[in-house]
Image 1 (cartoon, helix red, strand yellow):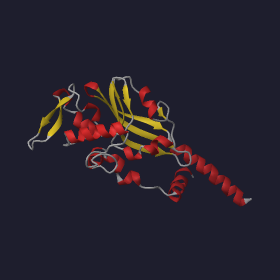
Image 2 (cartoon, rainbow, N blue to C red):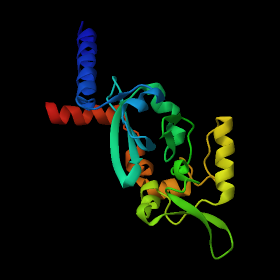
Image 3 (cartoon, helix red, strand yellow):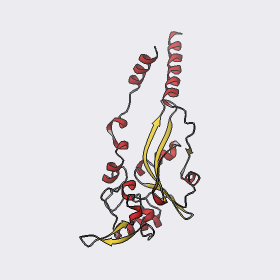
Image 4 (spheres, rainbow, N blue to C red):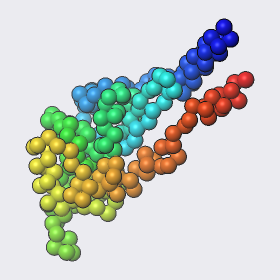
Length: 219
Protein backbone atom coordinates (compact mmCIF):
# COMPACT_ATOMS: atom_id res chain seq x y z
CA UNK A 1 0.00 0.00 0.00
CA UNK A 2 2.82 2.31 0.92
CA UNK A 3 4.58 1.61 -2.39
CA UNK A 4 1.34 2.36 -4.24
CA UNK A 5 1.08 5.67 -2.39
CA UNK A 6 4.64 6.59 -3.30
CA UNK A 7 4.01 5.61 -6.91
CA UNK A 8 0.88 7.77 -7.03
CA UNK A 9 2.75 10.71 -5.57
CA UNK A 10 5.47 10.34 -8.20
CA UNK A 11 2.86 10.31 -10.97
CA UNK A 12 1.31 13.51 -9.57
CA UNK A 13 4.78 15.01 -9.27
CA UNK A 14 5.63 14.11 -12.84
CA UNK A 15 2.42 15.69 -14.10
CA UNK A 16 3.15 18.76 -12.03
CA UNK A 17 6.59 19.03 -13.57
CA UNK A 18 5.15 18.57 -17.03
CA UNK A 19 2.68 21.38 -16.45
CA UNK A 20 5.32 23.60 -14.89
CA UNK A 21 7.86 23.07 -17.65
CA UNK A 22 5.37 23.31 -20.49
CA UNK A 23 3.79 26.77 -20.18
CA UNK A 24 0.78 27.95 -22.08
CA UNK A 25 1.45 28.92 -25.68
CA UNK A 26 -1.53 31.26 -26.03
CA UNK A 27 -1.03 33.58 -28.96
CA UNK A 28 1.73 31.50 -30.54
CA UNK A 29 1.04 30.08 -33.99
CA UNK A 30 1.19 26.31 -34.44
CA UNK A 31 3.20 25.00 -37.39
CA UNK A 32 2.54 21.35 -38.09
CA UNK A 33 4.62 21.11 -41.28
CA UNK A 34 6.08 23.21 -44.09
CA UNK A 35 2.66 23.70 -45.70
CA UNK A 36 1.75 26.04 -42.84
CA UNK A 37 4.28 28.70 -43.83
CA UNK A 38 2.03 30.15 -46.52
CA UNK A 39 -0.48 31.15 -43.83
CA UNK A 40 2.09 33.03 -41.75
CA UNK A 41 2.66 35.87 -44.23
CA UNK A 42 1.13 37.48 -47.31
CA UNK A 43 4.40 38.98 -48.57
CA UNK A 44 5.03 38.20 -52.27
CA UNK A 45 8.78 37.66 -51.72
CA UNK A 46 9.84 36.26 -48.36
CA UNK A 47 12.29 33.83 -46.79
CA UNK A 48 12.06 31.95 -43.47
CA UNK A 49 15.42 31.10 -41.87
CA UNK A 50 15.40 28.57 -39.01
CA UNK A 51 17.64 30.06 -36.29
CA UNK A 52 16.73 28.11 -33.15
CA UNK A 53 14.65 25.28 -31.67
CA UNK A 54 13.53 24.66 -28.10
CA UNK A 55 11.65 21.98 -26.16
CA UNK A 56 9.73 22.53 -22.92
CA UNK A 57 7.95 20.08 -20.65
CA UNK A 58 8.98 16.96 -18.77
CA UNK A 59 6.55 14.24 -19.77
CA UNK A 60 4.36 16.33 -22.03
CA UNK A 61 6.79 18.06 -24.36
CA UNK A 62 6.10 21.17 -26.40
CA UNK A 63 8.30 22.04 -29.38
CA UNK A 64 9.15 25.53 -30.55
CA UNK A 65 11.04 26.93 -33.52
CA UNK A 66 12.40 30.41 -34.06
CA UNK A 67 12.59 31.86 -37.55
CA UNK A 68 14.09 34.98 -39.02
CA UNK A 69 11.58 36.24 -41.55
CA UNK A 70 12.94 38.58 -44.21
CA UNK A 71 10.80 40.25 -46.85
CA UNK A 72 11.20 43.15 -49.25
CA UNK A 73 12.65 46.48 -48.24
CA UNK A 74 14.52 45.16 -45.20
CA UNK A 75 11.45 44.08 -43.26
CA UNK A 76 12.96 41.68 -40.71
CA UNK A 77 11.18 39.83 -37.92
CA UNK A 78 12.22 37.05 -35.56
CA UNK A 79 9.16 34.82 -35.18
CA UNK A 80 8.58 32.05 -32.63
CA UNK A 81 6.09 29.30 -33.50
CA UNK A 82 4.98 26.13 -31.77
CA UNK A 83 5.76 23.18 -34.01
CA UNK A 84 5.01 19.48 -34.20
CA UNK A 85 7.57 17.00 -32.90
CA UNK A 86 7.98 15.48 -36.36
CA UNK A 87 8.59 18.81 -38.09
CA UNK A 88 11.00 19.96 -35.39
CA UNK A 89 13.10 16.80 -35.56
CA UNK A 90 12.99 16.80 -39.35
CA UNK A 91 14.68 20.21 -39.41
CA UNK A 92 17.33 19.80 -36.72
CA UNK A 93 19.87 19.46 -39.53
CA UNK A 94 18.57 22.65 -41.14
CA UNK A 95 19.50 25.20 -38.49
CA UNK A 96 20.70 28.35 -40.23
CA UNK A 97 19.04 27.45 -43.54
CA UNK A 98 16.09 28.97 -45.34
CA UNK A 99 13.49 26.21 -45.26
CA UNK A 100 10.71 28.20 -46.89
CA UNK A 101 10.73 30.79 -49.66
CA UNK A 102 8.03 32.51 -51.67
CA UNK A 103 8.78 34.38 -54.86
CA UNK A 104 5.74 36.04 -56.45
CA UNK A 105 3.47 33.10 -55.65
CA UNK A 106 6.00 30.34 -56.31
CA UNK A 107 6.90 28.44 -53.13
CA UNK A 108 9.97 26.36 -52.31
CA UNK A 109 10.50 24.08 -49.31
CA UNK A 110 13.98 22.78 -50.17
CA UNK A 111 16.44 23.81 -47.39
CA UNK A 112 18.89 26.32 -48.86
CA UNK A 113 21.51 28.76 -47.54
CA UNK A 114 19.84 32.01 -46.47
CA UNK A 115 19.75 34.58 -49.24
CA UNK A 116 19.48 32.13 -52.13
CA UNK A 117 16.13 33.71 -52.93
CA UNK A 118 17.78 37.01 -53.91
CA UNK A 119 20.70 35.77 -56.00
CA UNK A 120 20.60 36.75 -59.68
CA UNK A 121 17.66 39.08 -59.07
CA UNK A 122 18.60 42.55 -60.44
CA UNK A 123 16.12 44.20 -58.10
CA UNK A 124 18.32 43.23 -55.16
CA UNK A 125 21.86 43.27 -56.51
CA UNK A 126 24.32 42.33 -59.22
CA UNK A 127 27.32 40.08 -59.93
CA UNK A 128 30.66 41.90 -59.60
CA UNK A 129 34.29 40.81 -59.70
CA UNK A 130 36.31 41.10 -56.49
CA UNK A 131 40.02 41.90 -56.18
CA UNK A 132 40.90 38.29 -57.00
CA UNK A 133 38.85 38.30 -60.18
CA UNK A 134 36.10 36.09 -58.71
CA UNK A 135 32.56 37.10 -59.63
CA UNK A 136 30.56 37.56 -56.41
CA UNK A 137 27.05 38.66 -55.55
CA UNK A 138 26.71 42.18 -54.19
CA UNK A 139 23.47 43.63 -52.83
CA UNK A 140 22.30 47.04 -53.97
CA UNK A 141 22.73 49.90 -51.53
CA UNK A 142 19.06 49.68 -50.53
CA UNK A 143 19.71 46.16 -49.24
CA UNK A 144 23.20 46.66 -47.83
CA UNK A 145 22.17 45.21 -44.45
CA UNK A 146 20.93 41.93 -45.90
CA UNK A 147 24.26 40.08 -45.36
CA UNK A 148 23.96 40.83 -41.63
CA UNK A 149 20.35 39.68 -41.45
CA UNK A 150 21.17 36.53 -43.44
CA UNK A 151 24.07 35.57 -41.21
CA UNK A 152 26.66 35.82 -43.97
CA UNK A 153 29.29 37.83 -42.15
CA UNK A 154 32.02 38.53 -44.69
CA UNK A 155 30.86 35.69 -46.94
CA UNK A 156 29.68 36.58 -50.45
CA UNK A 157 28.28 33.90 -52.81
CA UNK A 158 30.11 33.44 -56.11
CA UNK A 159 28.71 32.15 -59.39
CA UNK A 160 29.73 28.57 -58.58
CA UNK A 161 27.75 28.77 -55.34
CA UNK A 162 24.71 30.02 -57.24
CA UNK A 163 24.94 27.33 -59.91
CA UNK A 164 25.34 24.56 -57.34
CA UNK A 165 22.38 25.90 -55.35
CA UNK A 166 20.19 25.95 -58.44
CA UNK A 167 21.16 22.36 -59.26
CA UNK A 168 20.26 21.22 -55.74
CA UNK A 169 16.95 23.05 -56.00
CA UNK A 170 16.07 21.24 -59.22
CA UNK A 171 16.98 17.92 -57.60
CA UNK A 172 15.03 18.76 -54.44
CA UNK A 173 18.12 18.26 -52.25
CA UNK A 174 19.30 20.36 -49.31
CA UNK A 175 22.35 22.54 -49.92
CA UNK A 176 24.78 23.61 -47.18
CA UNK A 177 27.20 25.60 -49.33
CA UNK A 178 30.22 24.60 -51.40
CA UNK A 179 32.25 24.15 -48.23
CA UNK A 180 29.39 23.37 -45.80
CA UNK A 181 29.42 26.93 -44.49
CA UNK A 182 25.77 26.67 -43.43
CA UNK A 183 23.74 24.27 -41.29
CA UNK A 184 24.45 22.74 -37.84
CA UNK A 185 28.08 22.05 -38.81
CA UNK A 186 28.58 25.29 -40.71
CA UNK A 187 31.06 27.85 -39.49
CA UNK A 188 28.92 30.78 -40.68
CA UNK A 189 25.77 29.44 -39.03
CA UNK A 190 27.54 28.83 -35.71
CA UNK A 191 28.88 32.37 -35.73
CA UNK A 192 25.63 34.01 -36.81
CA UNK A 193 23.27 32.12 -34.48
CA UNK A 194 25.41 31.10 -31.47
CA UNK A 195 22.51 30.62 -29.05
CA UNK A 196 21.53 27.28 -30.59
CA UNK A 197 25.06 25.96 -30.12
CA UNK A 198 25.73 27.21 -26.57
CA UNK A 199 26.88 24.52 -24.14
CA UNK A 200 24.52 25.62 -21.39
CA UNK A 201 21.31 25.13 -23.36
CA UNK A 202 22.44 21.78 -24.74
CA UNK A 203 23.12 20.20 -21.33
CA UNK A 204 20.75 17.39 -20.42
CA UNK A 205 19.03 17.81 -17.05
CA UNK A 206 18.87 14.57 -15.09
CA UNK A 207 15.59 13.40 -13.52
CA UNK A 208 17.17 13.35 -10.07
CA UNK A 209 18.16 17.01 -10.35
CA UNK A 210 14.66 17.98 -11.48
CA UNK A 211 13.06 16.15 -8.54
CA UNK A 212 15.42 17.69 -5.99
CA UNK A 213 14.85 21.21 -7.32
CA UNK A 214 11.10 20.66 -7.44
CA UNK A 215 10.93 19.51 -3.78
CA UNK A 216 13.08 22.43 -2.66
CA UNK A 217 10.77 24.94 -4.35
CA UNK A 218 7.43 23.39 -3.41
CA UNK A 219 7.83 21.63 0.00
